[in-house]
Image (cartoon, rainbow, N blue to C red; front, top):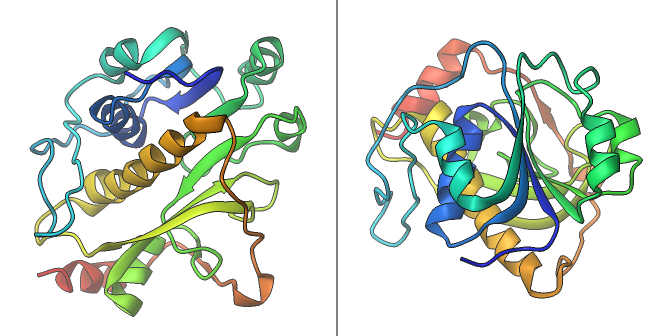
Length: 241
Protein backbone atom coordinates (compact mmCIF):
# COMPACT_ATOMS: atom_id res chain seq x y z
CA UNK A 1 0.00 0.00 0.00
CA UNK A 2 1.42 3.35 -1.09
CA UNK A 3 1.75 5.84 1.74
CA UNK A 4 1.63 9.59 1.08
CA UNK A 5 3.66 11.76 3.42
CA UNK A 6 1.76 13.91 5.92
CA UNK A 7 -1.71 13.52 4.41
CA UNK A 8 -4.69 14.02 6.73
CA UNK A 9 -8.12 12.56 5.96
CA UNK A 10 -10.60 14.92 7.64
CA UNK A 11 -13.70 12.77 7.63
CA UNK A 12 -17.25 13.10 8.87
CA UNK A 13 -18.84 9.79 9.81
CA UNK A 14 -20.89 9.75 6.61
CA UNK A 15 -21.58 7.63 3.56
CA UNK A 16 -19.20 9.81 1.53
CA UNK A 17 -16.29 9.29 3.92
CA UNK A 18 -16.98 5.55 4.02
CA UNK A 19 -16.84 5.51 0.23
CA UNK A 20 -13.63 7.53 0.09
CA UNK A 21 -11.94 5.26 2.63
CA UNK A 22 -13.05 2.03 0.95
CA UNK A 23 -11.99 3.20 -2.51
CA UNK A 24 -8.61 4.36 -1.18
CA UNK A 25 -8.13 0.92 0.34
CA UNK A 26 -9.27 -0.73 -2.90
CA UNK A 27 -6.74 1.40 -4.84
CA UNK A 28 -3.85 0.63 -2.47
CA UNK A 29 -3.69 4.19 -1.11
CA UNK A 30 -3.27 5.27 2.48
CA UNK A 31 -2.91 8.39 4.60
CA UNK A 32 -0.66 9.24 7.49
CA UNK A 33 -3.49 10.37 9.77
CA UNK A 34 -7.31 10.50 9.95
CA UNK A 35 -9.42 12.81 12.06
CA UNK A 36 -12.87 11.26 12.33
CA UNK A 37 -15.79 13.57 13.15
CA UNK A 38 -18.74 11.88 14.85
CA UNK A 39 -22.15 13.29 15.57
CA UNK A 40 -24.51 11.32 17.77
CA UNK A 41 -26.11 9.68 14.73
CA UNK A 42 -24.08 8.14 11.93
CA UNK A 43 -25.23 8.79 8.35
CA UNK A 44 -25.98 6.28 5.63
CA UNK A 45 -26.81 2.59 6.08
CA UNK A 46 -27.46 1.55 2.49
CA UNK A 47 -25.34 -1.18 0.99
CA UNK A 48 -24.38 -2.48 -2.43
CA UNK A 49 -22.07 -5.05 -4.01
CA UNK A 50 -18.47 -3.87 -3.93
CA UNK A 51 -16.95 -3.22 -7.33
CA UNK A 52 -20.16 -3.36 -9.37
CA UNK A 53 -19.49 -2.15 -12.96
CA UNK A 54 -21.57 0.76 -14.23
CA UNK A 55 -21.01 0.12 -17.93
CA UNK A 56 -19.01 -2.26 -20.12
CA UNK A 57 -16.16 0.28 -20.33
CA UNK A 58 -16.19 1.92 -16.88
CA UNK A 59 -16.07 0.23 -13.52
CA UNK A 60 -16.93 2.35 -10.51
CA UNK A 61 -16.33 0.86 -7.08
CA UNK A 62 -19.55 1.00 -5.08
CA UNK A 63 -19.10 0.87 -1.30
CA UNK A 64 -20.55 -1.36 1.36
CA UNK A 65 -21.99 1.26 3.69
CA UNK A 66 -22.68 -1.28 6.41
CA UNK A 67 -18.95 -1.36 7.15
CA UNK A 68 -18.19 1.15 9.95
CA UNK A 69 -15.93 3.97 8.81
CA UNK A 70 -13.50 3.39 11.68
CA UNK A 71 -12.95 -0.19 10.48
CA UNK A 72 -11.65 0.98 7.10
CA UNK A 73 -9.81 3.98 8.54
CA UNK A 74 -7.76 1.62 10.72
CA UNK A 75 -6.55 -0.09 7.54
CA UNK A 76 -5.61 3.02 5.55
CA UNK A 77 -4.21 5.28 8.31
CA UNK A 78 -1.02 5.20 10.32
CA UNK A 79 -2.82 7.07 13.10
CA UNK A 80 -6.32 8.32 13.70
CA UNK A 81 -8.16 10.44 16.22
CA UNK A 82 -11.88 10.83 16.85
CA UNK A 83 -13.92 13.90 17.72
CA UNK A 84 -17.00 12.59 19.55
CA UNK A 85 -20.25 14.59 19.72
CA UNK A 86 -18.99 16.79 16.91
CA UNK A 87 -20.45 20.27 17.22
CA UNK A 88 -19.18 22.05 14.14
CA UNK A 89 -15.88 22.72 12.45
CA UNK A 90 -15.30 26.01 14.29
CA UNK A 91 -16.12 24.64 17.74
CA UNK A 92 -14.38 21.28 17.83
CA UNK A 93 -10.70 22.20 18.11
CA UNK A 94 -9.96 21.26 14.51
CA UNK A 95 -8.08 24.47 13.68
CA UNK A 96 -5.78 23.85 16.65
CA UNK A 97 -5.39 20.20 15.62
CA UNK A 98 -4.31 21.18 12.12
CA UNK A 99 -1.97 23.87 13.41
CA UNK A 100 -0.31 21.27 15.64
CA UNK A 101 0.12 18.49 13.08
CA UNK A 102 0.45 20.66 9.93
CA UNK A 103 -0.12 18.03 7.23
CA UNK A 104 1.05 18.72 3.70
CA UNK A 105 -2.43 17.95 2.35
CA UNK A 106 -5.95 17.58 3.78
CA UNK A 107 -8.51 15.37 2.07
CA UNK A 108 -11.74 17.08 3.07
CA UNK A 109 -14.91 15.03 3.55
CA UNK A 110 -16.90 17.05 6.06
CA UNK A 111 -20.59 17.12 6.82
CA UNK A 112 -22.85 18.44 4.07
CA UNK A 113 -23.58 22.16 4.15
CA UNK A 114 -20.64 23.00 6.41
CA UNK A 115 -18.06 25.40 4.99
CA UNK A 116 -14.38 25.35 5.89
CA UNK A 117 -13.73 28.70 7.65
CA UNK A 118 -11.23 31.22 6.29
CA UNK A 119 -9.17 30.91 9.47
CA UNK A 120 -8.60 27.23 8.71
CA UNK A 121 -7.76 27.82 5.07
CA UNK A 122 -5.42 30.59 6.23
CA UNK A 123 -3.11 27.99 7.78
CA UNK A 124 -1.65 27.51 4.30
CA UNK A 125 -2.51 23.80 4.14
CA UNK A 126 -4.11 22.70 0.84
CA UNK A 127 -7.64 21.33 1.30
CA UNK A 128 -8.54 18.89 -1.45
CA UNK A 129 -12.30 18.75 -2.04
CA UNK A 130 -14.10 16.59 -4.58
CA UNK A 131 -17.15 18.34 -5.98
CA UNK A 132 -19.94 16.44 -7.70
CA UNK A 133 -20.26 18.69 -10.73
CA UNK A 134 -18.27 19.87 -13.74
CA UNK A 135 -16.87 23.18 -12.50
CA UNK A 136 -17.30 26.02 -13.09
CA UNK A 137 -20.49 25.21 -15.03
CA UNK A 138 -22.11 23.24 -12.20
CA UNK A 139 -21.69 24.87 -8.81
CA UNK A 140 -23.88 24.33 -5.77
CA UNK A 141 -25.76 21.32 -4.47
CA UNK A 142 -27.42 18.27 -6.09
CA UNK A 143 -25.61 19.13 -9.32
CA UNK A 144 -25.41 15.43 -10.20
CA UNK A 145 -29.16 15.52 -10.98
CA UNK A 146 -28.99 18.71 -13.03
CA UNK A 147 -26.12 17.21 -15.01
CA UNK A 148 -28.14 14.06 -15.70
CA UNK A 149 -31.06 16.16 -16.92
CA UNK A 150 -28.98 18.55 -19.04
CA UNK A 151 -26.16 16.33 -20.32
CA UNK A 152 -27.06 12.71 -19.65
CA UNK A 153 -23.87 12.18 -17.67
CA UNK A 154 -22.19 13.17 -14.38
CA UNK A 155 -19.17 15.40 -13.87
CA UNK A 156 -16.76 15.47 -10.93
CA UNK A 157 -14.15 18.12 -10.15
CA UNK A 158 -11.23 18.09 -7.73
CA UNK A 159 -10.49 21.54 -6.33
CA UNK A 160 -8.32 23.16 -3.69
CA UNK A 161 -10.72 24.99 -1.42
CA UNK A 162 -11.05 28.76 -1.25
CA UNK A 163 -13.44 30.68 1.01
CA UNK A 164 -15.99 31.07 -1.79
CA UNK A 165 -18.30 28.10 -2.43
CA UNK A 166 -16.95 25.73 -5.13
CA UNK A 167 -14.52 28.39 -6.32
CA UNK A 168 -11.09 26.82 -5.75
CA UNK A 169 -8.45 26.09 -8.36
CA UNK A 170 -9.23 22.97 -10.40
CA UNK A 171 -6.65 20.16 -10.22
CA UNK A 172 -8.66 17.53 -12.14
CA UNK A 173 -12.05 16.95 -13.80
CA UNK A 174 -13.68 13.82 -15.13
CA UNK A 175 -17.02 12.85 -16.68
CA UNK A 176 -18.83 9.64 -15.83
CA UNK A 177 -21.74 7.81 -17.45
CA UNK A 178 -25.20 7.93 -15.94
CA UNK A 179 -25.66 5.33 -13.20
CA UNK A 180 -27.45 2.07 -13.93
CA UNK A 181 -31.15 2.04 -13.22
CA UNK A 182 -31.94 1.32 -9.57
CA UNK A 183 -28.58 2.40 -8.09
CA UNK A 184 -28.91 4.78 -5.12
CA UNK A 185 -27.52 8.03 -6.53
CA UNK A 186 -27.32 10.04 -3.30
CA UNK A 187 -25.48 7.56 -1.09
CA UNK A 188 -23.79 5.25 -3.60
CA UNK A 189 -23.17 6.55 -7.11
CA UNK A 190 -22.54 10.21 -6.35
CA UNK A 191 -20.04 9.29 -3.64
CA UNK A 192 -18.48 6.53 -5.75
CA UNK A 193 -17.62 8.78 -8.69
CA UNK A 194 -16.18 11.37 -6.33
CA UNK A 195 -14.06 8.66 -4.71
CA UNK A 196 -12.89 7.42 -8.10
CA UNK A 197 -11.50 10.83 -9.04
CA UNK A 198 -10.07 11.28 -5.53
CA UNK A 199 -8.07 8.07 -5.87
CA UNK A 200 -6.65 9.21 -9.23
CA UNK A 201 -5.72 12.65 -7.91
CA UNK A 202 -4.15 11.30 -4.73
CA UNK A 203 -2.14 8.71 -6.65
CA UNK A 204 -0.81 11.50 -8.88
CA UNK A 205 -0.01 13.73 -5.92
CA UNK A 206 2.01 10.94 -4.33
CA UNK A 207 4.61 11.03 -7.10
CA UNK A 208 6.10 14.42 -6.18
CA UNK A 209 3.86 15.57 -3.33
CA UNK A 210 2.38 18.22 -5.59
CA UNK A 211 -0.40 18.52 -8.13
CA UNK A 212 0.46 18.35 -11.80
CA UNK A 213 -1.33 21.58 -12.65
CA UNK A 214 -3.96 24.13 -11.66
CA UNK A 215 -6.73 25.73 -13.67
CA UNK A 216 -8.32 28.89 -12.32
CA UNK A 217 -12.08 28.86 -12.73
CA UNK A 218 -13.57 31.19 -15.31
CA UNK A 219 -16.31 33.14 -13.55
CA UNK A 220 -18.03 33.90 -16.87
CA UNK A 221 -18.77 30.20 -17.32
CA UNK A 222 -20.09 29.58 -13.82
CA UNK A 223 -23.64 28.72 -12.86
CA UNK A 224 -24.92 27.94 -9.37
CA UNK A 225 -27.59 25.30 -8.81
CA UNK A 226 -29.59 24.97 -5.62
CA UNK A 227 -31.35 22.00 -4.02
CA UNK A 228 -33.27 20.32 -6.79
CA UNK A 229 -37.07 20.16 -6.75
CA UNK A 230 -38.38 16.63 -6.01
CA UNK A 231 -40.15 16.45 -9.38
CA UNK A 232 -36.97 17.32 -11.29
CA UNK A 233 -35.03 14.84 -9.17
CA UNK A 234 -37.54 12.13 -10.03
CA UNK A 235 -37.22 12.96 -13.72
CA UNK A 236 -33.43 12.75 -13.48
CA UNK A 237 -33.68 9.32 -11.86
CA UNK A 238 -36.15 8.15 -14.54
CA UNK A 239 -33.66 9.24 -17.20
CA UNK A 240 -31.30 6.45 -16.06
CA UNK A 241 -33.88 3.73 -16.78
